[in-house]
Image 1 (cartoon, one colour):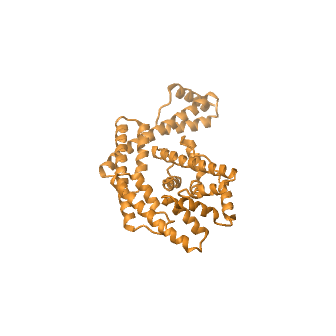
Image 2 (spheres, rainbow, N blue to C red):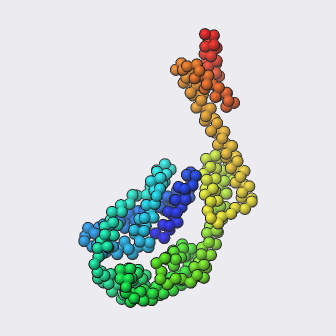
Image 3 (cartoon, helix red, strand yellow):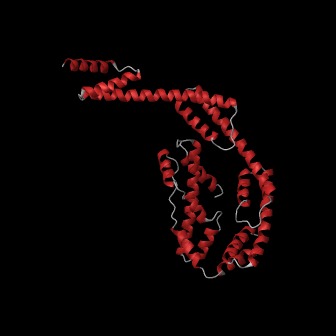
Length: 342
């Protein structure tokens, strides 16, 4: 669930833009979003099953132990415009996300509000207190602090466990940088930056991690750009119109990403290919319009349409600068000549 924020933001950026075209990157975003939705749907089903078994505390514990919480994930995945995104997925045959049922979360919220004591949380903490699972201790202590805000004891224990967990996360981040485990490093940064922390991580630590990730991001963008540019040049060189259009769409997606700045050579190559593509697209559209008009004229002649309608279509065809089939041209002129004689 660690990329839920970036995936949902990416979708909302697409929906807010003027460009709703298909591209491999957007297809990948749709796939990632559907996977996230399926995981949340599975968790909701698991919570529902626990409630049906009378295990309400276990269901609440499962929902609250997620990062971010299950209710927060549900909120993120049900953003405004989801129906537009689902429609876009259906149009382009991308992965369509499952619909999420939030009824179970409403039940858990009511159950939590009706809780009259801390005993379940105390029992749960006693279980993890004997283990080395610092993360579980921190998550439970945070819930205890929220449920029993007047207790300084829980706050002191939380601060102690957060310091231990934070040191472990920082150590894991150091090893992730050394081993170039960037996905793991991104997950660790999200955990370290969690607003739930009472003990804030030193700024120099988060800055270092962000710098490493940003450098890696730029390197990956450069690799993607080189691959995309090769696709553009290959499609342009082979006059492959559809492949060129797809490659140029991918290039536009890359160019819109923060941090990527193509050099002058790349810009010049893409501009040349794009000008060719736009010209070809214009010619194709003009040819399609001409063929549509020619077909309208042919049907009008066949069905003895009013002469003024035939003249209007013929004049529109003349403006295209294209030549009608000889037999259609002859048929129209003959009918026109006879009409003028009346």
